[in-house]
Image (cartoon, rainbow, N blue to C red):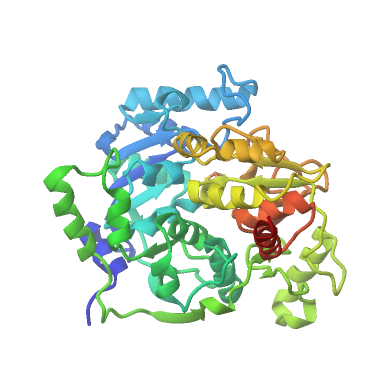
Length: 476
Ligand code: SF4
């Protein structure tokens, strides 16, 4: 039997097997941001160590950066000191830092691919759990903790266990109004938030193959929400076409040579897996979370499931979700009034996400009383969107057009929910208090669904709006 991509890339980067059963794995690309790196740099300094491969490490600022004004010094003293720390650390250790002045700043998982740093067959680590995003390119990419950031800085290696491989095949095709976000929410709903623990997810099948690179990034991004530390898609012609001409991608004949190698790391047709799961694309509806983890998700037309529909050991989590979110038995998420609409994040803050949301934003105006934010994932996304006039579409419809950053995904910056506000969000986590208010409530959905909720003021099946828009267009 042939090898799957995980095993090929793992074996190529394995320095040796350790007595612990772990692998000493060489890390091809290390991405760094301001939140999980300061302590790691301090530990390196205190131990008198250096960074032997600074050319393999790249840094940006995303979590703490405000999205209204990024003028220095930043108004928040703690944010300013984190910004100063990453600037100082990168200078001292010779690491390239994409500051706001470079035009390349943005969320670490948005800028890696758009700069061509992320390439197939690489091992990629970053002190951030959504590093799985980069797996969309056929890379073995995963999040690490602060002490592991130190290890990679000091040695370019990690001691890590090889995960098992689960192939998730999505057959058929998606209906109009159903997006990559719905696919991954559906996967997590079906397999559970812990279903992927110990696994790498290989996403495959006609639905995944038909996706753009940006859509594949959305899917891989949320692998960790299903418990899988990494997720990937086998590289194909779309991967190569995306990378051609990117700043850090090889050039000329070297690119063609690299492209041949990239295709060779894809899983063999007869590769073996520890598990295979098949889901039908036709079964996936626009999906919305109703609870306090991303697996508590339903098709927008479905009622919220009652505790009796779950296994006995899950019921306390379900009860907890009901209480925190304020639901009653028989409630539907559709029709729920929202206070805030957030379009952005490393899951859904890319150009194609903004295009889909703008298509919906054109159909109306933000409902009075709703605060609606559109936050591009990077400065490059912002430039591309502005060149297409998307910012004008959003602002004409009453959305705020912001500067690049993580914004309200994690609210380590001024963009926060207040009190019990309900937020329709294109981000990836709906944990209690995730968006900055200890009692704030998050409903995860696709960017088009967020735009629909912003316009109607309630959770709405985006297909109804798109169909109504089509009918109006035909009538005109
Ligand atoms: S957008 Fe959210 S999930 Fe992504 S890196 Fe930023 S805080 Fe983390």
